[in-house]
Length: 154
Image (cartoon, rainbow, N blue to C red; front, side, top):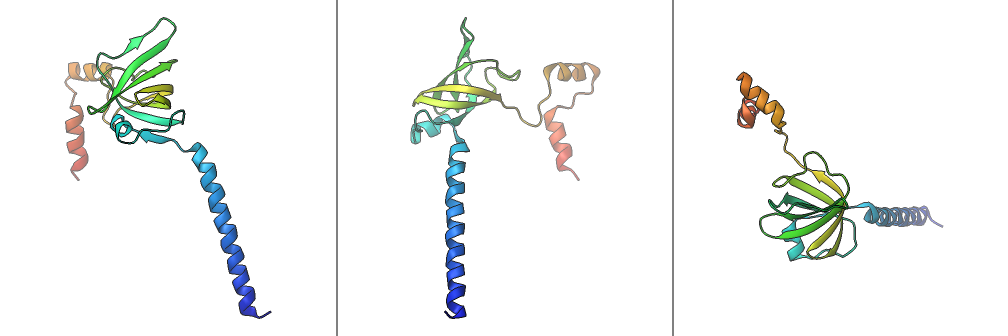
C-alpha cells in the first residue's frame, strides 16, 4: 500500500472519530440545554409540552396570588402576550409584581407554565430601597442616571 493511501485512511478515520464525537456531544448537550421563551415567543412558536425551558418577562401587576398550600400563581408578560405561571416553593426576595422574572420549568399547555425554580432579575444599577432612602436623607443620593454618566466619561 502506498504512503498516499495510508494517509488518506488516517484522515478518513480521524474524520469519522471527530464526527462521532461531535454527534455524541450534541446529544449530551441537548439533554442539558435550557431554551428561553418570552411570552410573545410562545404565541409565535409554541414550545414542546413537558420540556424543560425558561420563561422570562415581567410579573404582571395585580396577578400575584398566594394560596393556603404555599402555591403561588402569577402572570408573566412582555406587554404583548401573557403566560399563567404556577409555582410552589420559596421565591427570591426581589420577586414582586412589576419586577423582571425568569421561571424554569415546563409548559403544560401554551398558556400555562409550571415553574420548578424562580429567579428574580434586576439591573446592575439596583439599589435596595433602604439604602436609597438613607442616601437621600443624608444628601448623598445620586441615582442610577448619575452613575451612568460617570461611567461614560473618561
